Amino acid sequence: MAAELADAQADRHSLNKHARCENPMTPVEFNQSTYQAGVRRVLLITLALNIAVVIGKLIAGLLANSLSVISDAIHSSVDSLNNIVGLVVMKYATAEPDEEHPYGHAKFETLAAFCIAGFLFITCYQLTLSALQRLLADELPKPEVTALTLGVIIVTILANIFVTVFERREGERLQSAFLIADSTHTRSDVLVSCSVLAGLILLKFGYVWIDPLVSLGVAVMIAASGYQIFKTTVPVLVDAAPVPSRRIAEIAESVAGVHSVHDVRSRTQGGEMFIEMHLHLTREEQRDHISAHAITEEVERRLAQEFGRVVATIHVEPLMTHAADPVT
Image 1: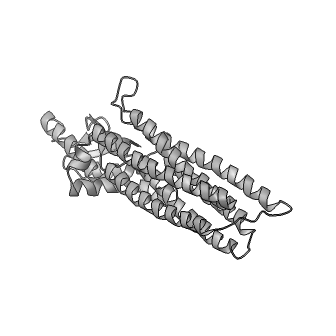
Image 2: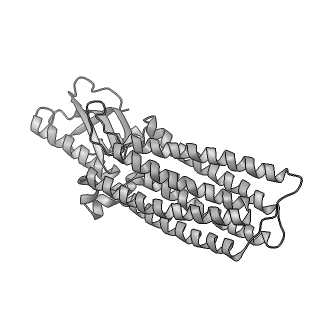
Image 3: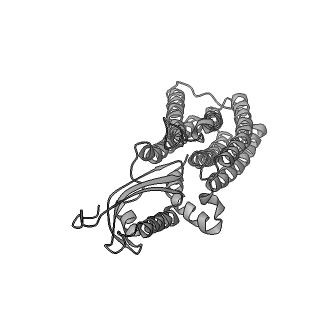
């Protein structure tokens, strides 16, 4: 998964906002069964394509005795493993909330994306070790680059481009962190395969050392992908605030009848933002319970308009109790 993963996941709340404006059914009437079926369909299609890519690269690499092509095949195999993990996780991530998990099970999906990073680092270690062993060997083996080898790499590049576009488009439509992460990793496969293809062309001109060197480059790209996933999934797993509390307070205080806001907390999970706050109404509004309820509904509506799918817990306090409290 490439560096764009961080931007993709950071923009998901903005995506929810635009989707709400263009299609009211998308974030408002979110259906778990539709989501699960959609993600499962995408994973099955990409799994079949990824397995074909791995088999093609592996056969070509073994026939040519090329470490870079074999490394590329190992790199691509992570995509297939990710799809399998995703299929298993979807069964649990989309399960309805229960007594033990009142907020739902969506973090299983984020945990799966986190595990992908672990697989990437293991792959990075294996590729680096193999490449260094070849570079330090007394005599470098000379791979045999044929038209078949070059053809297989070109076909797999085209297949990866299709998978990247298809999976990312569906991931954004379904608001799936796992699909977006996996599509970005597949996008890195395209770049890796292009570098491998360039290395194979140089091999035909006798530059034997380029093969293990390209493998090291593949390992570095895999490590960078793993780091980007860690950087985007860890904050979700440890309940880091997705937006500043001050911004949430500003939105709430923009509603007529709201005097001030404090004790704002927020976290994300599975495309939803959970917000808690204590809210003071103006003296005129706090005496009317019906009006107070309408104000809290308007606060939640504006939060959803700004951030997408929002579950807000708002505690209304009498103004005279904390009238001098600062907003936090």
